[in-house]
Image (cartoon, rainbow, N blue to C red; front, side, top):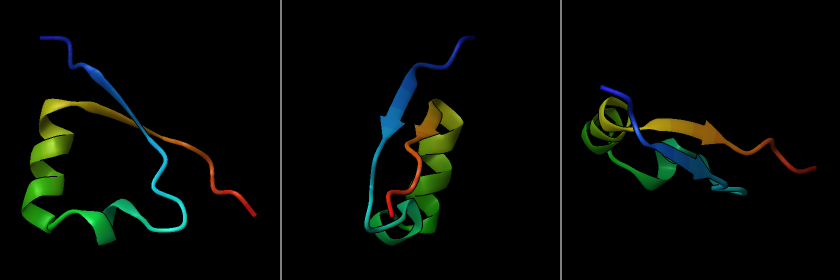
Length: 40
């Protein structure tokens, strides 16, 4: 099964701060996550 793609730009936070460990694991299981590069 091909996973849908999710583009994430959580700056200035990280995905670990936005989601609980359980929900982040579930998200990564169901979707291919592409995280935008950090801005400086």
